[in-house]
Image 1: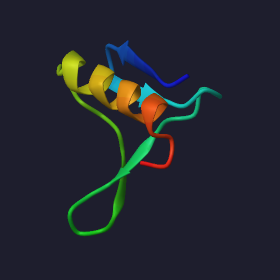
Image 2: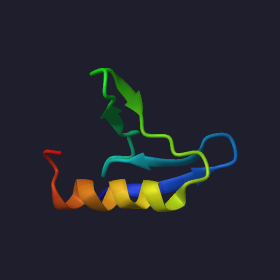
Image 3: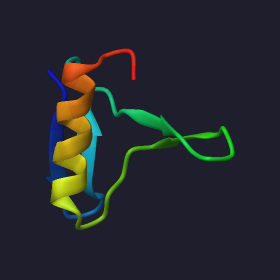
Image 4: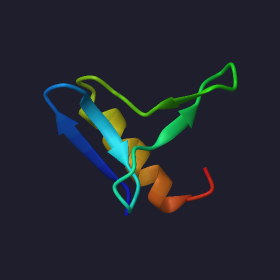
Length: 56
């Protein structure tokens, strides 16, 4: 199960079921870590979406 987590240093971010940080594709095709600063709702929404559609 994917999980939204929070740290003082990183803010909100998403990890996969094994605890590895999730990376997402940017509009330019590059990958970046799924950091959301203080946007808890966005991190939780991504974790939920990845659980519903693992291929996303």
